Length: 384
Image: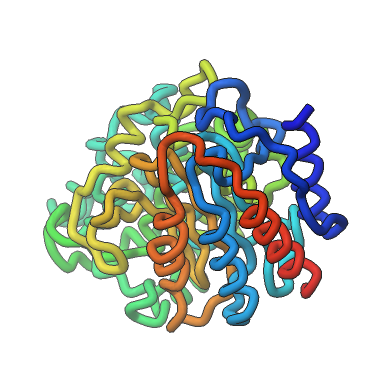
């Protein structure tokens, strides 16, 4: 009974209908996840029950509320339970949000699933094998030797100028072209494949083309069947270009709760209950540092790798899915941050969220701190 009352109280707060929680959670609540899957929705837990400090999290919510920095939401999952679900600025609860380049991490997952299902041989398959009509075989050996792994790790060797480093110059050129795959594959080579990291939106779009050519479905259709449906992700949109190809580098829209499901699937090594949705080896390789990078120290398979030991799906204007295996935790941020504030969620993760972790076991219940946390969450939402 205590659990159901607590969840109801938290939900009322999320809906802006309750003010305080009056000590309805037992101190002995175990800090473990083994009794449900969040397919139909996340279960809530007070932070202390999962070894985290409500006071520190309340300080974070208050900081964001008062700063007006255009962070839209913060969602924290630990041990499979939702400990914080706060909304700010103009963003409403249960609303889809553009996740921008976090889309790349989803495309990576689909490539791993396509390999599992036999649509793609392995990461060493040459990209040219998927594009016989693009004339890649007539190019030099360097371009013919570009593999899927090179696309996944942003080491294609192509002279790509479509990222933030070039103010997206090449991106607008690609989007104006009739055939995006042809445009990317016709970029000149800058160096040998596998040599150096060069963040490129176009190569992530090539991965979407690969999925469509190998499965006979668009990446969105394939995702709905093989990834979104098993996870219970239904409220989702994903744009396509003028030739009917799902945009591979961006334009996926998910709710923060569903972004957390993607992170949680990776936290569980691709396993959802008894179903191995993504091969565990793929998750491990995705989180393996393959090359030195730019925004964060290293890069995996369309995931950034931080030196602190966590992996990151990161998108324009402050969209983040942090996966912290050492803490059994997933943290999601959405926002509309200016470029100069892009790393604010990283700062908040390191200055508030990780320090809020006090134990791998349940902490003594703290009525005062939890009531304050619920109060500041309500204040943030009623100010929308």
